[in-house]
Structures are given as structure tokens and as C-alpha cells.
Image 1 (tube, rainbow, N blue to C red):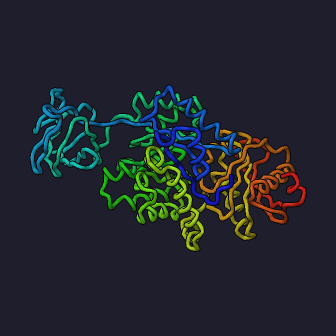
Image 2 (tube, helix red, strand yellow; image 1 turned 180 degrees about the vertical axis):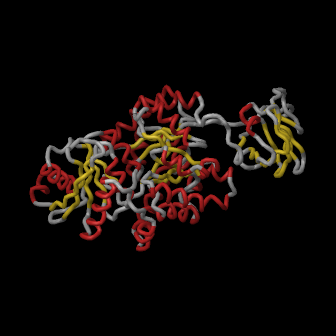
Image 3 (cartoon, rainbow, N blue to C red; image 1 turned 45 degrees about the vertical axis):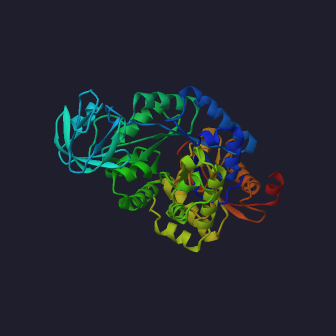
Length: 479
């Protein structure tokens, strides 16, 4: 199946997309990667879901990417007495403490001693997804006395967000560690870590995964934005998780933050996903709002690697229509005359390595000669990652002997991955690159393509050769 766009689409599995038949429809509509939300998935059923999605690969003869999204720590207030909630008036004092007795209008238990230890006067607490806002006046390891800035009703077990506070605990809970181990064992391609605060959080995930999957950092806290470059360096990809980010920082700051995150990830050659509320209205409506269409288009114009659907595909009434709409928006934007100029303006200079120099050279040759495809022979996928970083006008066909590599590349901008045995020599490399370019409808008789590889063949990280190949009748016959 040939996609007519470069940006990738991620769709979340859920009640509306739990069967193989529905997943097949979503894949046909444009999904490249399926997200499994571990907040709503039993560890014991994960292998079954993976097997169902892998069944699509033989059906469509294309690699299918799978992203397991870890839940992360859920910080919540304790229980209230009476009817389970209280009204907090603006200007009132309200205490969060270590006392486990039911709360009232003056106090409530906060079952997270690590938060009480980290809070300082002036820190903000945001409750119930942004509905209430408190500011700390006094803090100790036993209690935090706050002033209500934005009041409202607060019920038992509502969430707590801490935009000013770095908590001295890992972003991974025991559940996350167990989920990550199982996810890596059953063969997911990417594992996303929620509520990342520091690069050490990603190092912990990598230690558990041990190279069996790639690690994606979800940026949804101001603390992560403050250390963005370090976190990107410690990750294989990042996600602009705008839902929680919009709770923990002023909403008007989110669009600018999103642009900065996309540009930094692109500069470093790491895939970047834009997520949350992209086509939110299509949960209950067959068509999106104009603002949502513009929102998706902005991510495409910025050169993001992927855009993601959450509840739209997991629990919405129109999952296939939502994917198809996202697909159409992407195709339309990428056909706009200003699209290429925006990507060109944001292109970063390559690093001083042989592999980056080869990737840049391949891109410039393809642009100069207006070539249809850049065929990259890659074992680990790093060659395809480097070429995708250039955002070339030509499609990047990644030829790899490793099925896991092909699946991981489903998340990467402009990459069309094919699993095939490794090349035996330079002539075989060029011949089969031409053959696959024809077979996948990216080139035809008489076209020229660029072939990028590493010699000796099969050596990861040894990209050192670029070659122009002509598509001849023998390639068409073999395709």
C-alpha cells in the first residue's frame, strides 16, 4: 500500500477499534502506527492485541507499527467525607496534609508524601484538569497550606498537577515498569513514557527495554520543556502531549511551545509526534471543526513526523472517518506550494559525521535531478532516520533485512519501509533498489533513483556510499 503523504498517522485502540476487521479498515484509511494505551489495557491481554495487529501485516504486506503508551504516575487528592466533595471559595485557605481522615472544606489528605516534601511557598497546584488552582503559602513535609486562586467544587480522588514542582521520584511507577517489560517482551516497536520530568526518566525506561523497542518521551510538563534538549538527546522520539501540557501551563503558551519542540526534535533528527484533541469533535460528529482542520494542518506544515488520534479512534462514533479526514488534510497540505518552502527554511545543518554528510548529499542530488526516490539500505534504521531528517522531496524507501527495523520506521516522516534480505554486493544493491522502487510505484522505466548504503553490507552505522541508478526494463520485468 502506497501512502500519498509523508507525515504518519497514529491511532489509539479502544472499544471502537478492538476488532481485527475495524483495525484493517483504519489501516486502509491511513493508519501507520497503532497506539495501545496501557492505562486501559490489561497486561495479560497485550500479547493478544499485538498478534491481532501483526495479522494485518500479512494481510496488507506492509509493516505495522505498534506504540505502547505507559500510564505514568497518577497524582490525586484523597477522600472527602459527606457526599464526597466540597466547595472551595476563591480566597479561602485550604490545606493538603498527611492525615488520612476524610477531608472537609478546610483540608484533605494528599496521599503523596513526595509532593509535600517538594512543595515550596509560591508553587501552584492545579486540581481536576485545570478547574481549580491553589497557591502554596506555607509548606512542610507534613502539610501544605494554600490559598484558593480559582475556586469550584473539588471531589474525592481528583487529579493534582504541579507545574512549578519537580518531584524527586521517577516518572515510572511499578505498574509502568512491569508494563514496559511485558511490552518489550511481546514485541511492541515503541514505548512511550508519560509525565517525563528529566532525562534520567528516559534512561530508566531504556534500561528496562534494553533495545527491544525504541523509547518515546511524552512532553506534558513544564519541567520537561525546561530540559527539552537533554530529554530529546536521551530519547528516540518525543511526543507533544498537549492535553496535560495545556493544563500545567497557560493555554496561550502551548502553540509556541509546540513549534519550538517540533523544530528542536527535527534539528536533532528525532521523530516528533503531535497529539491530543486534534479532531476531538469527531468523537461524536462525522466532520471536524474548521479550527481542528487548521490545527492538524499546522502540525503538517511544521514538518512533524506524525499526528495522533486518541479518543477519536479509541471510543468515538466515527473512527474510520476521523483517520480518513486526517489523511486528506495531510495530503492537501503537503501539496500546497508553500509547504516545501516552510520545510526548507527549517532544515538544520548536518552533523560532522560521514553518515550525515552522505544523507545530505543524497538529498541534494535528488533535489538537483528531481529524482523520485531515495533508497536506503539500512540494518538498524539509522540511515533512514538521517535522510528523513533532511525532509527530502523524494520518498525515502528503507530496505532492511530486519522486520523490527521496518516496523519502527513506520513512525518516521516520509519513510516507506520494505523487509528484504540484505544486498550481496553493490550491483545487487542497485538492482533490487530499482526493482522495489518500481514495485511500490515510486519509479517507472527510465527514471533515476538514489541508492544509499554502507559498505561492507550488513554493518550497522556504516553509511558511506551514494549511487545513482537507472530504472531499466529488467527492473520492471522483475518487479
